[in-house]
Image (cartoon, rainbow, N blue to C red; front, side, top):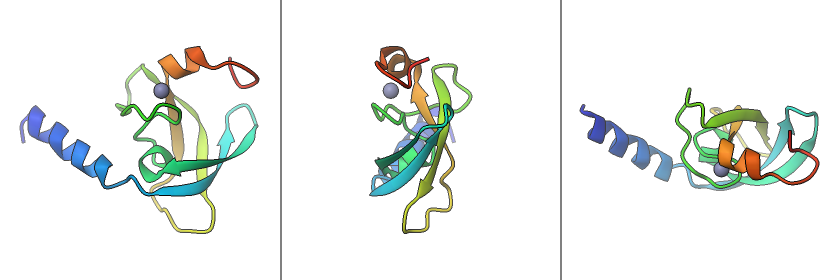
Length: 96
Ligand SMILES: [Zn+2]
């Protein structure tokens, strides 16, 4: 697979993870929030705020906590990420 095919494969995989569900998100600062997230967000593939695609290991994204599905099974769910643009733009209590 070349890079373009890999990217297309990745995009198609993300498009298959757009079901929205309710999650309990435990942020690194200790806050717990109920959030409606796509599976892609809850699995750490998309920014929690703007849904930009995360590249894992890319400096542009930071783990901000972890998600737990409420009332349904979602085995791949774990760390959730925000992009630096959103982190820099965050106003209020959870900014750091
Ligand atoms: Zn973002």
